[in-house]
Structures are given as C-alpha cells and as structure tokens.
Image 1: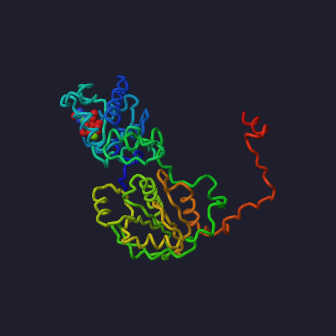
Image 2: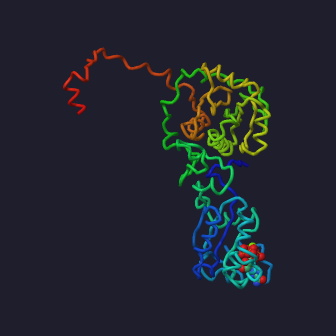
Image 3: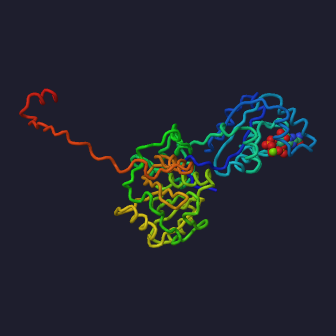
Amino acid sequence: MLQLHTSNMPRERTYIMIKPDGVQRGIVGQIIARFENKGFKLVAMKLCSPTKEHLETHYADLKSKKFFPGLIEYMLMGPVCCMVWEGDNAVKTGRVMLGATNPADSAPGTIRGDLCIHVGRNICHGSDSVESANAEINLWFSEAEQNTWGHHSEGWVYENVEEPKQEDGGAAASGTSNTVGTTVHAPLTAYPGANEAFNEYITYSDDASIGQDCPDLSSLKMVQGDALKTGDGRVKIVFFWGKYLKWQCWPTMIGMCEIAEKHPEIDVVGIAADKKEKDVLRFMEKGECRADCPLAFDMNWVLKDAFRNLMKVGALAVPHAFLINGEGKIVWRQAYSAGYQFATMGFYEQLLHVLAGDDISNPNGPNPEPEEDLGEEVESKDVFACQEVADAIW
Ligand code: RTP
Ligand code: MG
C-alpha cells in the first residue's frame, strides 16, 4: 500500500467508543482531550444510541462469554460516543491509554485507571487489533463520515513528514506545516462539466510530442513492479520524477498512485530521472519514496532524452507526466512544479476522456495566430511634458 506521509495521508486508525457510563458521567471531554493531547487525529465522531443487534455485532467475539448479556444490557443504558482516532500505532497505543479491561488492574495514568472502578462500568472501548479496528470503523461509520484531513501539527508530532511545499516562504523547511486546515490534494474527480463538453483550449497540435509513438519502454530497469509494453491496448501514464526533488514530487506521486488504484484498467510507471541507480535504490530502501506503483530507473536518461527529442525542446522538466493511449501514442503531457497535484491541472480530465474513447490529441489545430495589428499608431507622450498624463497620475 501507499506509504507516503504527507499531512493528509491516512495513518493507522482505531475505533474508540465512550460507553454509556462515560457519557452519563460527563467525561467525554476528558477522554477526547487525552487522545488529542497525545497527538492523535480525530477523523470521525458522533453520539448515537445503537440497537441491540448492532451491539451484538460489535461484540460478536464475546457471544459465548457469561458476561455477554450483561455487557449488552450495560451498553444499551444510554447513548455512546463513537470516535475514530488516527495516528501511528493508534490501535496498540489506544489500548494502552485505556488501560486494562478491569479497572482494578488498570495502571494509574490510564483512562480506566484514573476514572473508573468496576469492569462492568469501564467507560470506554478500544479496538484490539488493526483488523478489528477496520471492521469496527466500518460497522459504526459510513465512508462519508470518515474524514481525511491534514493536521497542522503533523510535522511537530511525527519525524520526517514530507510537506508538499507551496509558496510558504520556507515554513515547510523549518518543520512547520503549510497545510493548515486544508486537505492537501483534491479527491480524484473531474471538474464539474468536464465530461459534458470537451475542454477545448488545452490541447494544440503544435506540441510536437502529441500524436507521436511513445518511446520503447524496454530500456527501463524496473525497481518495483512489472515492465510495461506500449501499444497493448491499455492506457498508460509515464511519469518522470527525481529523488532529488522530494517534496516537489510527492503530491504528483501520490496522485499517480491514486489514479493507479482507482483505475486498474490503466498502467502506470514512475521513472526516476536520477544519475545513479544505487542512489535511487538507497532512497527507496530508506522508505523515502513511498509509492506503491511500478517504479523504474532510466539508465543514462535514455527514455528521458527520447521523450525530450519528441517534444523538440532543450530539456524535459520533472516531474512530468505523459498520457499514452491504447495504441501507444502520446495523447497528453503535463509538467508539474512544486505543490501541483497530479490529479489537478486537467490531467485527470484528459485521462477520463481517453478512457471514454475520445480523441484528445488534436481538437484545436495549432496555436492561434497573434491578433492582427490594427495599424493605428499609438501616440507616445512624454509624461513630464504632458499635462493630460500628469493630471491622470496625480
Ligand atoms: P472493550 O472491547 O470494551 O474495549 O474491552 P476489552 O477489549 O478490554 O475487553 P473485552 O474482553 O473485549 O470485553 C469487552 C467488555 O466486556 C466487559 N467485560 N465484563 N464481567 C466481566 O468479567 C467482564 N469482562 C469483560 C467490559 O466492559 C469489557 O470492556
Ligand atoms: Mg474488546
């Protein structure tokens, strides 16, 4: 799975529930505060009064226990406060924070150790494994209720958070987040209306690479995943990145992986346009490149040069993505700069058109000619000698 942690990437999640006694005793706030203070991120919360059946499903693994009927009765005594907390080791740490099941055994400093006495009134529940956390989260919350958002303190809670840098005056480099209160990258949806009318102004035939055959990908040295062959009927994205770029690449890299996950019918390859393969491998080993789609090394920039030659330009800027249709032709390309996201700037819309079978290669012909000179001489005036201009200025 995708492991790249910019501030809005999901980490481990756990389901924490304040039981009816905790709600009745008015200690919901204290419990929430402990998770907030720890550094975990609240991604879902609601107060609800579940049915008996719902609680029986939640505690299904305890059905054979003698205390099961009493447990269900206890859980039906009033509303419960359901929450999903996110953070590294959230499941295990969440359990440690709750304390032992029986408050008589819970260490002081834990929630149960500090705030309750009897096992049948132990005020809170926490998932006991990542698997049960995922099942419980989906039992209690719909997908729409589970929020993904970037926490402004992420870079102060975790080490090595890669912040996608924007025009922030260097705040990202100093360790503070530049994503205050925002979701870093837009969800993968086309902009409204994109599929109704073809977006006419973005493709021109004087981009020399458009309509050309995608260069042979067999020279690539695959680092992860299988080699790709163009013209096999499958749409492809060829994405150039460089380890030296780091944060400039991450948002585009994440977007690329999201597209690959969302569209199994297409192939994606990320190509490291770096000098030495061993540097790239080392970078991957260190876990800094946390992309889960096929990745390749472009020895001696063979492929990068091949694309550059097709474009008839002096340099191929990275990050740079090429969209290749099923016949192996380049139908769209896009360069990215810091902070730009893969799914934005029209790329995803273009992909959807290609998948829908639209020909996006040349709907507009060449760039329009510059507007004709109307032939009127523009009178030049000396600003200091002309009263009219001086009046306008002052
Ligand atoms: P929870 O699921 O609520 O987080 O608690 P847990 O994992 O620490 O403990 P578990 O074995 O799953 O038990 C679920 C809840 O059942 C009640 N219980 N009563 N009378 C008893 O011996 C007994 N044992 C467990 C507790 O409310 C416990 O939290
Ligand atoms: Mg349990």
